[in-house]
Image 1 (cartoon, rainbow, N blue to C red):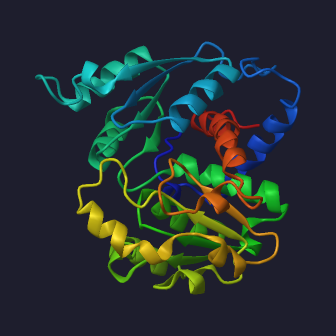
Image 2 (tube, rainbow, N blue to C red):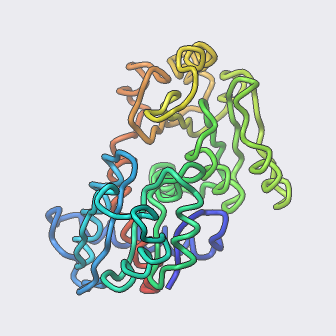
Length: 309
């Protein structure tokens, strides 16, 4: 079995296998209904247990569909319905119970340590649906979307992130090292990626470019990424943070300095970090981006069960 926790820990050859498999599976489903099961039914008889400690729309829905299309079934348990290290039961014991009943475990959590502890005690694969430091399923799917639209390897493209330095960006930085693409980041001075992340990039002999000017970051980009500046559970001075990012809103003027044929992506939900004109404009591919979560996550599941073709 394989865990899928953080892109930086997975060989690029395996990440590429996932993307190639997702492309094949998507092509085979052009004339099928949402819940039609793939003909090979690769996960027939498997039960996936899902727990969401944080709110979720796209991840929850896309994984539900992905699991069904692979011929498996899933059960989603609310976090407050399990002990999860509380009520006298250790997290290790919870992990052993989950391993007894299920074939795979999917966790969206507010604790990186919890994710790590589960991975050490489970005897079934675990998939990180989102943690404070990482959102690997989202970003690998985004790589798929970019290559699908641009019809060339992401290594040949200029990628730009404008906005907060969060878990999605951490995974995008990991992807930039794995797939060797140029990454520009546009953010205010006090919002740069953590030193731990930057040190890892340097250790792997790669470089990312950080600009405290949105236009300079966006210049000659093929893809502009963004995310909500203030997340639902942000424990910060939200008014101050919004003010700090007021010059980083992605609008027509930002998109003008990008390459012809550039695209805009956003993992959603959106806030004031992007104008309505850009978000709903011709360069925006956010709905295609969201749909592709299903296809890539199917292949992530197959990777975890060592069933990639």
